[in-house]
Image (tube, rainbow, N blue to C red; front, top):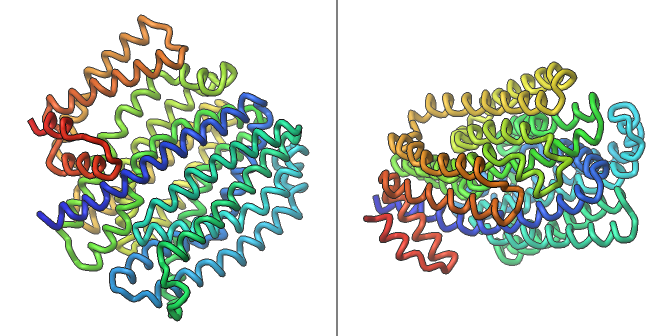
Length: 510
């Protein structure tokens, strides 16, 4: 049990850093989006469409090597074979740079054709030309941050991407809008901020994370890592297709105003990934190390504990989005965005189920079942495209949300079933029923608050949500939903964040 605690403690401490970084990143990210959205719904729609194009193309440029880097760097780091670690990183960086540059050139020279024939908006042309530079930049950044993650050094990602990039993005956006640059200024701010992240992340990795990088002679295992990663190209590409198809098809069937509304609701719903991302970022290298060392019991317990934390932490967030979708959109983006409230509810529910089973997805990757992951993504993407094509012309924004939601839930169920068949690990515990029971009191409170008060004021809404979270926590204590692994998580977070949580630990223990 000592070893089990050690692995979960590693995830808990690292998750604390990631969580703080994501909180800062999301706050700054929403400020960035709010500045653009409140300035102009049309400009926000155009930028969202450009980011969708970037997202698809830079995913292709990675060739799945972003996941390969984390998996194989963790693997050979555990075996102390650092020459292979360096070979993996160099191969991945050079490959992605070449492909990313090629795709960037294609986007640059065909921006007019894409804008006129697919999205019927000439204002998009110069935006796509500038966006083309972000493709190789983003791919190299993801690889650099992935390598640092494999060394379990998450703080450098927090510094460079979550903090510096977002602050610079906001500053440059405000400056360029003040100078009257409009859409050109918005995309230029995005590209320049992304470039700063690349420079910082590369510097941190070479000088702080892996200081022996310069001294070690690389040993290349090109065939093995490419064979592993190439199926993941389709996984990542298809994941991007699933994530961006709704925006693309809204742009094709509707207009940039619909895209703007949809991309106000979608990022809020995607906050459901906040806790899972913090935990999974550390789950991958830790679980990979346990897999290499054949510590099956510890792997199983780490898998189950991580999944439970995701479920327990995401429930109050889901309830908030369901009960206060109108208020959240109105307060953050403005009343013209409230038409996306149904989108917010549908996407929140689907993301909740998808991220509940995200550890199963990464377990398949750790067990080298990348073809299964690719098949799941292909099926999900095909369903998503078909449903978007059928539903958007009839139901508009709601149709796009339903199409994406169904595809995410299908993929999540496949991950869970396949992972169970391969590992024989069932991650869900009886304590989940206690956790669900613990939501009853906060639900009653939220219903009462919504009926009695006008929660269109930000402060009042935050107070209401804070009280509901407190009631949820009290209910978790009363139903004995906390186990010893949860106590360890809270203790580890307290140590890492320097918060005094002894009273909280004593309360839960009782």
